[in-house]
Amino acid sequence: MTRRLAVIGGDAAGMSAAATARRRDPDLEIVAFERGGHTSYSACGIPYYVAGLVDEVGDLVARTPAEHRARGIDVRIRHEVVAIDLAARELTVRDLNARRELREPFDELLVATGAAATPPPVPGVEATEPARTIDAGQRLRGQVLRGGDDAVVVGGGYIGLEMAEALVIRGLRVTLVDRAPQLMTTLDADMAALVQDAAEGQGIRVALSVDVEEILLDDGGRPRGVRTSDGDVPAAHVVIATGVRPEVRIAREAGLTIGETGALAVDDHQRCPGHDGVWAAGDCAESHHRLLDRPVNVQLGTHANKQGRIAGTNITGGDVAFPGVLGTAISRICSREIARTGLNEREAAEAGLDVLATTVETDTRAAYFPGSAPMWVKLTAARDDHRLLGAQIVGAPTAGKRVDTFATAIWTGLTVDELQWVDLSYAPPMSGVLDPVLVAARASASALARAT
Image (tube, rainbow, N blue to C red):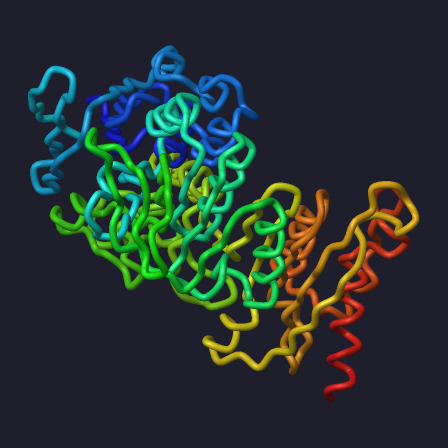
């Protein structure tokens, strides 16, 4: 009898798993349920669509529902899974267009429900946009094009910064509000200060340690301002970017195990423990942190795609393990790039690790070459064995992608003493004679040597 794989969620993890399973098992019946109207799209590209740097919303879609169907995957958009019955091996699915509920059987189940926005519980918040989906991005872009000179972005993380940049590019006056004492809480405070300098240099007003108390609405129910603990701020557009949480409600109600992070517990094969034939991947699932040796919930499309591919492989009889994460991430605020990997100084201290942090200011290219600009690199290394444990970068264009070299060094267990001698490329248009990676590693190695 034909086996049936049901996938809940039609974006990165879900469709990566479905596509992998289809390639490996042409006889497997695969059905994927997506409550939105798009599949396999780049949520990370939405700020650039709002900014006008990406012209067409279709450019953000890697594969449409029709393209998936042509490859033998029964994709059903505008279908929301509202309940999972593990004993009966059945889903309750709400067809949002026909307004009816269906019962859908499964032999194998992949939960890829992603993450949900966590807006502040304040009056008027329902009139704002989280801009996490293509539909929301289209609405926000349309609103911006229709007019309004002022905007408020609530939240100073990656998405908040990217949305603030998008609105600046559109010519709006932007205020960025965050209740934290710094932007980018994934960075140490000294590196975050460089990000704030860049934001303010682009005309963004940054208001930190400030609470949002109310979204002020006009008579038509549209935003006209934001009431904060520091006073009222005018705003025709309000974007909420206060973070997300794993979307696990129906999984919890079905009896699947929720881990300590609030995401679904999985083993390294993406299996949900205690439930044969049930898998989870992407933003709703935990990952193993290679340095902390514990579960974390890192919500990035890179991990979602990899975990989906691993789940699809193992669902069809493979034996592949997800090797874990380091928390590598990159973004930008206008002309300044921001990147990190591994543990920052604060995270290392919280984990009880004895580390030494060093920071260098260097140049993106040979100092004399046109276009060279400053960049800052902060490394965290273990005092005992000098292993590189973390890197943070803030700097001009081309600075940020050097984080990938640091991530590779951490992944393979290099010490800063070893990293400073790695054979990296050099040409004046690309770097000084010693790449910033080598400059930072040498500074860290020297500091560690002096500290012993």
